[in-house]
Image (spheres, rainbow, N blue to C red):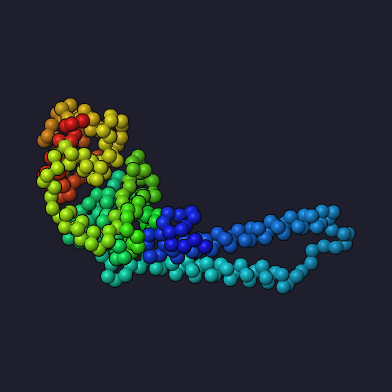
Amino acid sequence: MPTNNDSILFPPQASTFAQDVDALYYFIHYLSVFFWVGIVAAIVYFVWRYKRGHREGVGPSHNLPMELTWSIIPLILVIAVFLWGFKGFMGMSRAPSGAEQIQVTGKKWLWNFEYPNGQQAIGELHVEVNKPYKLIMTSEDVIHSFFVPSFRNKMDVVPGRITTFWFEPTMVGEQQVFCTEYCGDGHSDMLAKIVVHTPEDYAKWVEENQKEDTTTPLPELGEKLYTSKACFTCHSTDGSVKVGPTFQGLFGKQEQLTTGQTVPVDEEYLRESILQPNAKVVQGYQPVMPTYQGQLSDREVSGLIEYIKTL
């Protein structure tokens, strides 16, 4: 049976309970193959053995040992699979008492992470290897689902409710997060990454992330933020139609709002749209953009504006 990172059908095992999930799957899989081969072999044998039919006067008869065999053995196997699966389910449902808690908000079409110190990040969660984490999750709009294939764990994220998801990463590197509940046009772009660091690298990341970037030129900083803050899920840079207006040729044009008013796209309008996106909604688009108030510094907002101006 494949173990550790040698799984045939799945991504590498990157959490403490991934190996147990795979083991149960392969047990059921090979058990099914065993019985399938046996049943098909029996069918082929009986077709050949009785190809001329039964002799007259000879019919099916009651065989108690055989009936007990095909009733008791499957019952034992089903109970074993249930107990194995229930044990794994309980382990995946209960986070250790010392797990670090991180707030997660799902919304069209991004994942927002908030650390215990109040720091927020969009689309990227940084954690430490061999340390348990508990995600406290909710949705601002519709049902989403937080799925990390390499962790072998998935949980729905429901508006108006709190659901939890815990993991203890065992492998350094990036782990992909998907939304697996269809949530609208940008569903396939609702991605995130969990970046797992060694303790030393995690400490460096925390120290560096607390410093504001004051050296990168504003347009270049804005281009980085366009990706890291998941702006690409709703706004294109090549003129193609997405959930929100394209950034190509946006600066300097006139936009007609849902109120019928026409406004120029200048620095003030872009800043307001980033921090208070529902204040002025462009005609033909839905008011689904989340606010970035408190998530971007003044310099980062300026960087996004300067980047949009270059397009």
